[in-house]
Image (tube, rainbow, N blue to C red):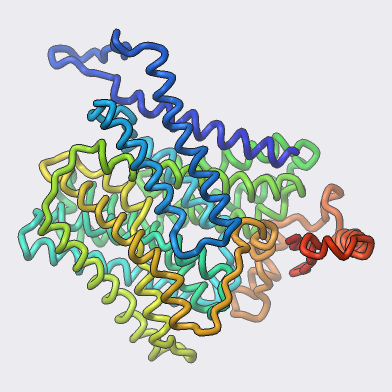
Length: 539
């Protein structure tokens, strides 16, 4: 009951933020004074009409949740969930246009996207990252995410600059944001598919780091509009390096400090305060990164990884489960809001079409993705003892969808003559890649892997993801050994919480339930998998 209550509160708060953001357009600034006018609703906007506005937005989220549930229930893999969410937003946009409301009344400003919607998405991807395969393939993942993203940005930026479709700075701003991949459909299919674990780790890990790297690149180029000293190539590179490593340090330091706080302060008897403090410290990391003019996104991603690896073990049992479910719920709601808004933009935005720019951009993103994957793979195959097959490389190339992150960044570009053109082009590319590449994921995997067996475990196997948050790292390398023998004992609690039953106790209780259950309840049995001495996996 506590888990459902906390999750419901998170969803409700996210809905309130989403609905209230549409009031941003009501604020006006007179041209003859510096005083901001008090936002006053137009006389013709009755209470009934305003209530309908709220009803529209809430209905889209309700409908999206139900459709997502049926997708999981009937194991529909040929159509990405994000496509349905976009469709729901498009239907809402069409209704608004039919009613004659062509002006965007549900406008979300750039600060809303960057400060409220992106942090939960990025933090959850780091917190629930399956770190065993991630750290085994960390060198390859880092190469694709950093070097590969830089290659993709350069290919797209130079292509747009040479063809004179956009000014040089606008070209690289667009190239950096469109290099942010969002392979949600591929990851969703491969989580329950019988494919190589290395492929899963590379696609999932690269997608997590790629978003952070692309956002850092994007912010670096955007800052160049105002800081002329950074227009040089060396200035941009230097700023990127400082921001990249500085943000990682901020996220790691705050994560370690939070772990020590939870280790030495006994919050376990007050789970509500414990979880509240955890949420506040996580978002504080993002604000610190932004306040120090670093990347709050990369800082909160690093903090999510450190939090799940150390702080998680200092929490009570109820807070562990609540953290996993709430962070996942917040990320789902934020992604849904972005995709609904993306569909809403199809009809309600003031589009500025440049068909040659759209066609050229589609070609360049494929060329950039190919240069990213195949060039980096060529180098890695000459270094690693286990080379990547062409089959694996092609799936990685195919997984370069553009989605919530790219579209969100396009709304935060500098409002110059090319602002609407960049948004329209990004919108088309997100729709194209999500529908074509996302919808073609399952057929491609079934063609390449003839024995592919896809199971729907994304919605039910919640504790299975918790199990893989922190794997056994002994013997992998020197750093893992140091972490296991020295770092973990320092930052983790050594005494098991009395609120957390031992794995043997939980295992015995479940086995008793299984032995007393009827044969008709075989599909509802609970399978136990003990991965370490501190956590149990309940399917």
